[in-house]
Length: 32
Image 1 (cartoon, helix red, strand yellow):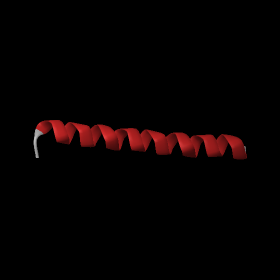
Image 2 (cartoon, rainbow, N blue to C red; image 1 turned 30 degrees about the horizontal axis):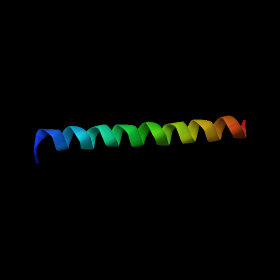
Image 3 (cartoon, rainbow, N blue to C red; image 1 turned 45 degrees about the horizontal axis):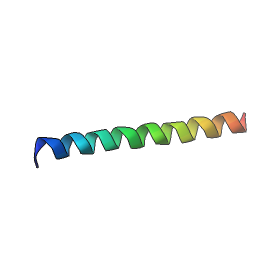
Image 4 (cartoon, one colour; image 1 turned 180 degrees about the vertical axis):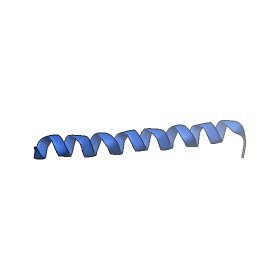
């Protein structure tokens, strides 16, 4: 695998994690 693909994959993973976190936080705020 070349470096560009690795960076893209890591970046995508990071974005997905942040998106998931936003969903969870928003859900908690709505529930509160």
